[in-house]
Amino acid sequence: MSQILDLVICGGGAAGLTSAVYAARSGLDFVLIDISSSMGSQITQTSDVDNYTGFEKVNGMELVMKFYEHAKALNAPMINDEVQEITKENGIFTVKCAQGEYKTRTVIYCSGASHRELGVKGEKELLGRGVGYCAVCDGFFYRNKTVVVVGGGNTAVTDALYLSKICKKVILLHRRDSLRAEKILVERLENAENVELMFNSEVAEILGEKGADGVLLKSGEKIDCDGVFIAVGIVPRSETVKSLAKLDNNGYIVADESGRTSLDGLFAAGDVRTKALRQIITACSDGANCVDSVNKYLDNL
Image (cartoon, rainbow, N blue to C red; front, side, top):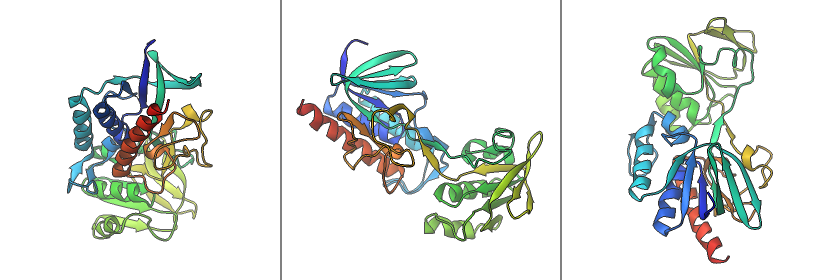
């Protein structure tokens, strides 16, 4: 594409779709690019969202479709492609994708984050055969069975709650002596009769040959199970811009509330940027703020 756009949005999660809504309303010449035709990123892997204002409880996929339909109603151009490289020369960005490239004056980078691995023996070997990172995606395979969830934050607790409705027993392993999840989630978990909490427990190995059948703790204790779900945090997908913008020690793009990064014209939104709270609602806020910053940046060119 030889045309120079005002904006390219890289990512179709909450931040990206909100950016698309605001960009369309601003009359910007833009395109949103996401590797998934369904958009939504990690939200689609969430069973129940009950902390998004206006929705007492909503399925993650349903909420994403609301975002998508809103953007689509505004004729926001959305393309299914993979962003492979971003460069900047003479004030213009080139966004190279698997199926083409785009020239643009600004970029909102909102690629999100991926699941952090435990890094133990058996994790990669048994992935998809009893080991997973998405309880909503794979939970139905374990109906009336026993599963282990590893982690202590909101995702781990939410996964355990979701699985408790399907599985015979859920064992939540956490390496610390207390959970880091929101109080309301912890209370729900403690009231779930088929959930067992095991604190100060670290996984040394995931056991099994044809499929996961247990975990070995560093203490030497073995726990039998039919599946293992890992929820120990996220890793930002910032690889594409690491040579363009400043990253912190954990790989997050350093950006303030306006989304501005260390490179003029490049803005970051959502889970990929430095921030205290990573939630759907804060990702949406980031998207709106970034488009406001884009408009101000373009006005000053």
